[in-house]
Image (cartoon, rainbow, N blue to C red; front, side, top):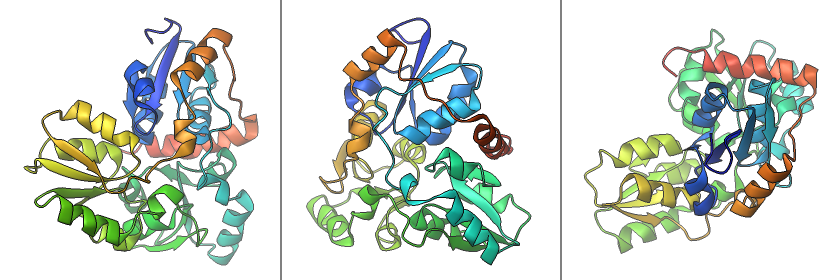
Length: 295
């Protein structure tokens, strides 16, 4: 239960504002928050993150009330894909399984066979019997997975990406290396493949946290949303963390403020609802992911 109110659990993503992370009961990546949402017992869950994260919590917890402090906080990548796009891809590749990155809408999850996160995408794809996989909606994460599996990956849509990670360039990585000799470069798999190729380590935010505990580097260049710097500084205060670019800011994540969280708790709103038929199908795809051993 959150210190803000005993009936509420506050779940915060690694990218939200520092003061919201500090107030949260749990801070994590999409996979961690999806798991934690099902393991807490308070009647209310407050999700400090973009809309698909709040939807996911509501889908997995149909008997609890999920609040999203800022309904306008959405994921630009998720909004690029509609269920009809997935069905069109299935018509072209009828023998393929559909893997939906959790950064997708509930309606897209509802037409998927299984969900994944950036932390477990490779394991999820390799768990499937199918040799072909329609991977939605991030082409960069799809490329990361394709390089680590023998399966054939079809990214849908071809233009799908996180605009924040997509904006990171090879030139920025090289400039950061030049400015901090000996630093380790970490990037998120939502970054373009050319940027990934420049990195010393590629991983989800949870993987980055584990890595900073073992890397011998005193300085780490971080190629993901700037909110992650605060989390890393808390986890490894003896190390120096430098953003790979000053422009890695998700304005939708930053819409969530401590004041909006407090208002959501005070008013018990806005409540997140997902239509029953959509929720049921999306829940099956999410629970299939969560049931995989070792994930």
